[in-house]
Image (cartoon, rainbow, N blue to C red; front, side, top):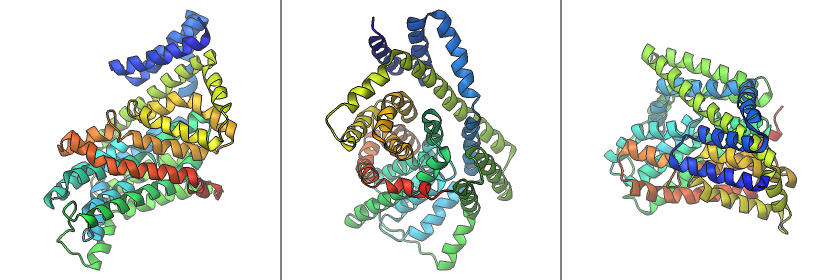
Length: 433
């Protein structure tokens, strides 16, 4: 049996295990171990289990993951998400679709505190949906803007996806963080424009709020969010000018979020325990998936399949941008059946060599792949944010999926803009010190 055929069979076996419900990490590790055993024997397979796990987990950079997750957890327990929403509500509530606009803006702000899209969607669903329901917003619009806005959690730094992409492709995590700022703000702005024009055209979808607030009340509402804004600016500026490494920025962010939660008198023993427990859970999930994926990628390298496919694709008589568009188009249906993180880990051995061959910026491609990962979070049948929002809001699943559709189209516009104008991603990193 040829090595290429073994690689193809292993890929099929991985997909079968995922469909059968085996956790992603163990699906990767199982097929990687079996593949190495088939090629080099049982001894090499057992040795790889230990060597890959140790070499990956010994990386100092990986401390960034639990630190930024902990920062997000302390931010959540400090009540920042609630304050963000009601501050945005006081500023935007009188506009058509004002509550939906406030939800999108608060998702954007909360994304700067946590790298989790699921946490953003679940939190904003709990806070914002009852308010939109009270003002008789379209359930589809309400659910759609919460699910789409929640995806910004993995694009606007800090981002777990950027950390893992940076590790497996040896790309600067600091550059990736800074590169995600403008694309995140661009997508948030596109969502807001979509909501405004939809509600302007059909006011019944999102009627303006009847409550009015003075300028004094509006500025006073910002008092609840200034702490996390200052903390985010401190962390990002520290990365931007080179004062902090990403791991150091994570430590500063986590400690700062802890101080802010304590200063707001919202820190209890229960909340600290909950934050630590959730940090352990999310970090262990991410790290187990990373170890399993690296074992599987070690096996794939032995087969030569990624190199063969990359060479075959680059030999096509097409321009580099045409091949890039084909790759992006491939990610859309793939994201419908595989979750964001496993999708990236599974495809990087095949795709990244093509990006390097054509001379594309790995930082720019990292942002592009992250946006495609965001799209996978809201595309059924596997789009996790759809199920999170449905569980929180109790809106029928069909209505949530229909409400997502306009936002999915906006994602395609955003992807097209990132491809056409790479400087949206690359301008800030190019000015870093």
